[in-house]
Amino acid sequence: MQILSTGCSNPDEIKLDKKPSPVLVNNAGYNFPKKITEAIQQKYSNSILIKKSDYAPLFWDFYDANTVPSMATTDINNDQKSDFAFLIQTDHVIKIVIAISDNEKYHYWQSPFSLGQFEKKGVEIALDVKPTGQTDIVKPKAQSLVLKKNGFLIRKLEQDYLILYEQKGEIISFELNGETDF
Image: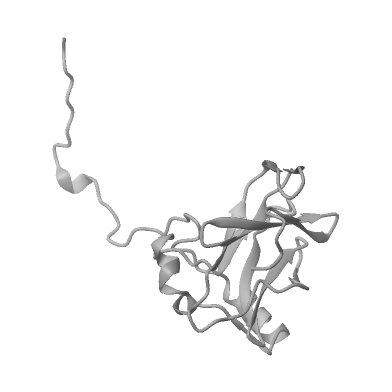
């Protein structure tokens, strides 16, 4: 058996950046466009974007502290532009806002339903990306959803509750456990 070993004769030939570029894993290290967050704050002026500091200590037992659980990004309408989801607080109620691109500008959708009360103990709801594929549920009745485009997933701690996806320009919700009460 012959082992071939190669090395670099001059270690200075390989230079690495001292500051690594951010990697997107469940939105860790991702900077959301300021124009989007500012537009949401202006459009929904009576609302506040949920921040990492608003989360319950228990939440961090389930999730990596490097994530930003109140924000997610993916392309939900296949226009090859990023769409964004944010958790907001409006009158002590948590809702979701989606900034969806039409390839020229962003349109904003706010959930007509509540994701629960904003409580002193902290937020326990997270946003994530739901990739294409089939989702089957059994309770309270058997249903299936086939996503042909990415969607947004809403979780409470580790329990998946709701998928939001785009269909013909509309945001559609698919309940995963038959409960709308968070």
